Every structure is written in C-alpha cells, then in structure tokens.
Length: 465
Image (cartoon, rainbow, N blue to C red; front, side, top):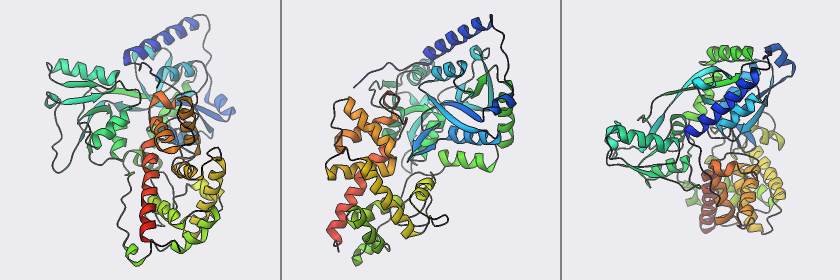
C-alpha cells in the first residue's frame, strides 16, 4: 500500500503563508480590480471550491450530497446562478485554487487566520470548530466529563493535528495519557470512530462536526468532551470579490434559521442513518412479506431468485412502502428521486410498491450491463448489490484501486470490497484513479453481506415457488 506523510497543521499554515506572500508580492505590481456581483452573475455559474468528505461534499447513489454542498446550492439559487462544484484535495489547495481564479468562493470550514486576511475575505456564517473526545456511552458506561480523567487512559489518534493536540494536552496535564499514534494509512479518523463504537478501542479524537455526524450512525457514542480550544472558521472569497462576500454574509444571516438550512443540518447531524430490522413474523406462514407476489413477478426479468429481491427490499426499507431515508430515497426499494424518474416511476407514485419494484428491476438490469467486465455471474451479483447501495461511480473507483494495487478486480469479497472500505480515507479517495471522491464504504460492505446472509436464510425457510 502507498504511504504518504499526513500534513500537520503547521505544514499547511506554512504553505498558506507562502501562498499569501506570493500573492501580496504580485499585488505590488498589479492593482486588484474588483469584480461586481452583477458581473459575476453574467457568467450564470457560481464556481464553488470545497473538499470531498462526509461533512462537505460526496456522491451517494449518483447524487451530489453533503452539508456544505447543500448550503452552496441554496446560496447559488438565491443569486439566480447555477452551481458548479470543484473539489480540491487539501485545504492548501483550496486556497491556491481560489487565488488562482479557479473558483469564486470556498464553501468549507476554512480556519480563520490572521495570515490569510491579506489575500481572502472571510464571509458567511462563522462556524466554531474544536476537537472532541469520541467515547462510548450507555447504561453501564460512564463517559469522561473532564480532560483530567484522560490520565491513565489509552487514546488512539491519527498523526498530525489530532496527535499534536493530544501531546500538548498531555504536557498541560503533566503527563499520564497513553497516546497511540495510528500511522496505518488504511485507517481513517472515521475508522477509528467506528472502532470506538464497536468497543475495539476506548477513545479517539475528531473534529466536532465529523464526530457529531458519526453519532447518527452510532447512537452509543458520546462526543461532548472538548479537548481543544475553539477555532473560528467560515467560507472565503478572493479580495477582488467583495460584493460576493457581502452577499454570502447577508444570505447566511437571513437563512441561518430558515427551514431549508435547518433541514440540511438535521439531515447530516441529527437524523439516524441506521436501520432497525424487526423480526419477520410472516416467515412462520411460509411468506416473506406482503409483496412476495411482486418480487416473484419481476425477479424473472433479471434472472434473479425472487427471494434475493425480497432480501434486497428488506435491507432497504423493512418492507415499509412509506419510508423516506435521510438521503431522500423513497419507498419499498428506496430509489433516489432522479433514479425513480429515470426508470419510469410516475410522479406521485414513488411510494407505490409495484412501481418501486418494477423500476428497481430496470435499474438493476442496467447496472448488470455496466458491470459486464466482471465475467462470473455470481461475482457480478455482489458488485450489483454494492452499486445499488453506493452508486456505480464508487464501485468503479474501488475496481480501479484494486487493479492498481494488484488485487483481483473481478472478485468482490476480500478484494474490491476492501478498496471500497478505503474510500473513506483521504489517502485513497484522492488517488488519481478515483473519480468520485470520498465514500463511507463500510455501509456498502455490510449491505452486501447482510443481503446475502438473509437470502441464504430465506432459501432455507421459504420454497422457491
């Protein structure tokens, strides 16, 4: 596997200082001509720079998503402009691209520093970020409430600013914290959070927004204990776009309490993303669900066992035709809005069971064609299920990574699935062979296994006909 030294906070600040210095030097010879908001609007397109990640921007089932993405979309819409997202690979590159004119505004929690004020105008909502201790909580677990309680405890952190902060905190307390630096480049901060939730490690450290988002996946986490000082952060524009900065300020001030803004914040930081699967009582009667006739009717169109289609539906919706996921997927087969429309679901019929199954089967047939490079039909089935959950783009990325690192790109288990897991790690989703950025692969990894395990159970208990 490749190794790459993670950038520490001091490194990228130094890089930003260098960029700022170069910009200021150039400005000594050339007067900055401001661009008015009306002139910018003439282009009809707002180019937004951000980073790929779970709290900013990612692609899910072929749809652009992310908290910063949604805010950017709302802001562009308020200006009457179309939105175009440009993704950078790091904070320094965000600033570099902005100063080079490759974007109009940075939509990311960019730390507010004195050094960059000569080059940037900070704008929009001022977010307060800090690092928190990620720990388990529950009826039998008392979470730590004070940093002094970390003395004698084991804390696992990634190199860079998380490790640096824990070292500083340890010095402030006079020592005693057992700090474990996790250098493995295949383990991300979110992987460490998952390990805390699963009880593999006791503590890790993460930024408060990332930690809060992960509580929607793991309700047994406590992220209340701050371990660092507050850092103000906001969006930013170049100095030649002062009216755009003012517009962002006014928009954020007017919309911070709007239904749209609240809905976006709730979607990413409050709504549970876990699915609770109840017992299927109908198995006792030789039935899987009330929709068995639909599964039998349409499964043959794709040469599937109807019980496999039923397992997919159960994993997606618990056979609840009225359910809407945190991401906006609807109905029995949990189709995203554009997917449902593209595969023939009439407007207003998204919760109709038959329309949902019929469209899902059409979509599966198309995905099957797109994955013809996987010759073995059984292996291709795993890829299809993964694509149904993640979207084809991320599966293509995982295939490309597997091929690059000498694994079998036509086998799912222990090969391609491992690289889908790695797509939550910056070292891999920024790889040149990846085209779709960050993805939380653990959900899809578990999704495929859950469906196949349940399908095996169905085959044991329910006759094929």
